[in-house]
Amino acid sequence: MARAVRSGEGKIALVTGGGTGVGRGIAKALSAEGYSLVITGRRPDVLERAAGGISAGPGSVVRAIACDVGNPDQVAALFGAIQAEFGRLDLLVNNAGSNVPPVPLEEVTFEQWSGILAANLTGAFLCTQQAFRLMKVQDPRGGRIINNGSISASTPRPNSAPYTATKHAITGLTKSTALDGRPFDIACGQIDIGNAATDMTQKMNTGVLQASGEIAAEPTIPVEHVAEAVVYMASLPLSANVLTMTVMATKMPLVGRG
Image (cartoon, rainbow, N blue to C red; front, side, top):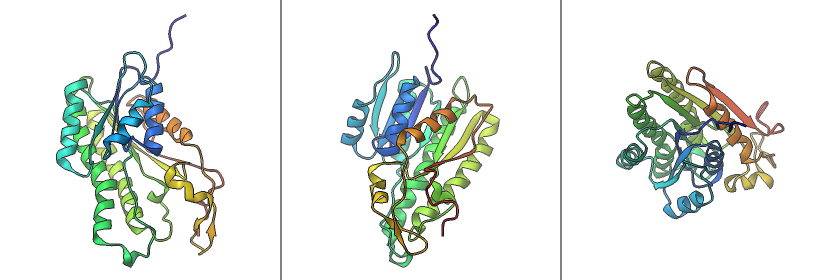
């Protein structure tokens, strides 16, 4: 019997924020599909542990490269390393991001605002820019970019202005990337994730502030559901694209929030 060919076999993927949470889950799922992986983040020790927990298939590798995606020099070095080792990039998952404490808008410091802008938006732009430069000239030409938008790309939580602003901007970046990438066979889509069960969302189990002023627990979904959705988006031919997808717990108070 012929061996089944996995959708990512022989392809190269970069997952930012790949050392923990959703990024690590996505990286594991892509590896299971045959991708060779580069995972990146700011903490080398976290990345190395994550890479050690991902089983690379035959002919595939997993690389951990530390990078602050908000730093253009570090991003350029990251993509230089990818080009030097692999010669191409088939998939970029812009997943890296951070948040600030949920405080009233007027209490957010300029340093907090600047930091979240760099991590969530500037980082995605810099990585997209470098991916374009590589995907345009590689042979075969083109590739796919998937941005982690979060449901905050459409609907905010209370006291979340910096995070929400960056995630709304990710939607604009996604659409512009999809448009500008068309002539070069570069597809770009966005996945908006609601309450995936990670260390960052543990507080959902005990209760978080709602728009009504109440504190209420919210349901979560396993990270694997998100990873499976990303694998589906990545499995499409470059002639097809999922522009936006929302994956969330069925009973999450998004529809009708407020």
